[in-house]
Length: 557
Image 1 (spheres, helix red, strand yellow):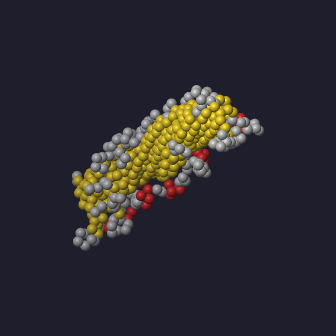
Image 2 (cartoon, rainbow, N blue to C red):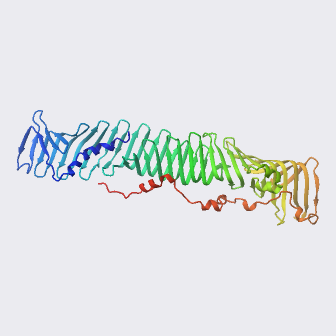
Image 3 (cartoon, helix red, strand yellow):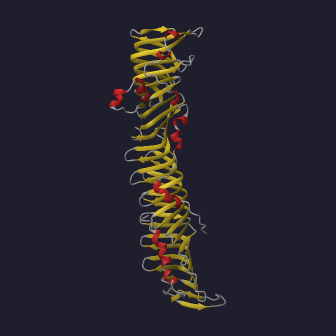
C-alpha cells in the first residue's frame, strides 16, 4: 500500500480520546439532537429511547466523536448507549464510519460497531462485519473478515488489530495484499508504521513481476520490495530456485543473497549449486557461491559434482557457464579430478580443468615434477591422467561423455596390478580420448611420446619385462578400466628389458608424481578439513531483524 495507509486510520479514532485520559473526570456522552425522547422503565429499564422524527436524526457526541443514528438507547447512569439504524460515526472532517449497530461505553471508552462496518478516510477504506475499539488501551481490532483498500492496494484478513503505543498493526488468518506490483499472502502480518516494515509469520507467499518468495518467517519492506526470509524459505528468481536458512531479496537492485545450507537450482540446465553463501545478480545473469560451494550436474544419467572455494554461474538460462576458482575437485561415480580452477560451458558441453597461472620466474625455474605438481589431474578407473589443461566434452543434448583432451605435458600413470612399486606410464604432448557408453574406449597420444610399461605373459601371468619405448604417437585401448593394448606409430625406438636391467630410480619417467592421496573417492572427499571447519554465519546486516522475528505470540481474541 501507499506507505500502508492503514497506519493512521484506526489511530485517529483512538487518539481522539487520549486527551480524555489526561483529565480526572470522565465526560458524559452528550445528546445533541433527537426527533423524540422517551423513558419507559417497564420496557427499557434505565434507558432513554431516542428516535428519529422526520429529518431529525439522533446525534450523540463524546470526546470529539459524533454518532448519528435512527435510534439510540442512552443509559445516562452508565454513560453508555446503543445505536442502530444507519449509524454514522464521524471524527473531524477526515474520518467516517458507517454500520448497522453500535455500542459505546463512555466509562471505559470501549466501542463495538457491527453490521456492514465501513470505515473511510480520504485515502483508504476498511470494510468488516464487526469492529472493536478500546480508547484507553489504545487498541482496535476486528475478528471478522476485513478488507482494507487504498489507492494502490487491497488488504484482506480474517482478523486485524492495531496497537497504538507500539504503532503496530497485526493482521491474522488468510492475510492477503493485492498490489499492482506484488501479491502477498500470509498467516500473520505485523506492520510497524515508523519503520514501514511488515513482519511475516507462518506460511507466507509473495509474488512480484519477476520474483516469487515463500517462507515461514520473514520481513518485507512493502514499498521498496526488499526483505529477509527464513524457515523453509525459497525465492524463485531469474529462472532459478534459491533456498537457504536465511535469504535476502531486493527488487530494485535485482539482487538476492542466501546464507547457510543454501541451494540454487537451475531447472532448465538441470543443475544445482549448494554452499553456505550465495549472491544472485539478475542484471548480470550471474550467481556467486562460496563456503563449501558444490555444483551438481547430470551427466550419463549420473551426478557430476564440482567443488571449489568459489563457484560463479553466468550467462542467460540457455547459455549457462560455470567457473570454479581455487581448490577445484570434481567427482562422478566413474571419474574424478582436481585442479586450481575450472570452466564449464553447459551449452557447448565443455569442461576445462586449468592449472594455477605461473609467473615468468616459475616457468624458468620449474622442473618437470614442479610443473606436474601444479597441473590438473583426472582419474578414470585405474588411470591417473594430468597435463597443462584437461578438456572434457559432453554431448549437450543427451548429456553423455564424448571426448577427452589433454593439452601439453600429458602424463598417464597407472599402478601395476602385480608389482607393488611398479607404475605403467605414458607421456606425450597431446591426448585425445573417446568415450563409449560413458567409459573411455580409446586414447591417442601425439608428440614426443614416451612409454614405460610392465609386460606379463598371457598364459602364466609372469613378468616378461619392462617395455621402455619412445615414438611420435601411439594408440591405446582401455580394457576393464585399465590400459589394454598399445599400438606404437612412426618408427618407435625401444625394447623390453628384464626387470633386473632397469634400476628402480630409472622406472620413473621424468616428472613422475603419483597423486592418489588427492583423488576424491566419493562426494564427501570433495571437501577438505578447512571446508568442514567453516562456521555458519547469518547475513550480518539482518541479525537484529532475527530477534524481531521471534516474538512471544500474543493471544488475540
